Image (spheres, rainbow, N blue to C red):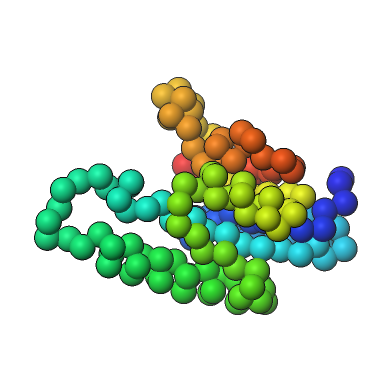
Length: 146
């Protein structure tokens, strides 16, 4: 196994995030306690829901979602005693933001989850597939159920 020093763990804040974090912690442990960073990326609502909904303020809703994601990320990080500076809550295109953060941190491994898409879903892409294209470090995709 490679000698990993900095591991970026990409989570979607679902219940499956714990499995991804556990895999990353195991790898960190066998690599002399490599430094872990957690990242969650929220796609901008304006992109996700390109609808004309005059009764909904998308900017306020985006702020609320980012704040809620930050709380959940702090809970996940706190459960494994990660300092806040190693928790990254971003807004943008998930695959691109994960690749860029890995580069900024000097990560030598990215750990993320994947559902093993096939057919049209595979052609349309997924976050893990997007991260794989253009990443400059190792990538572990943890197989998730469903």
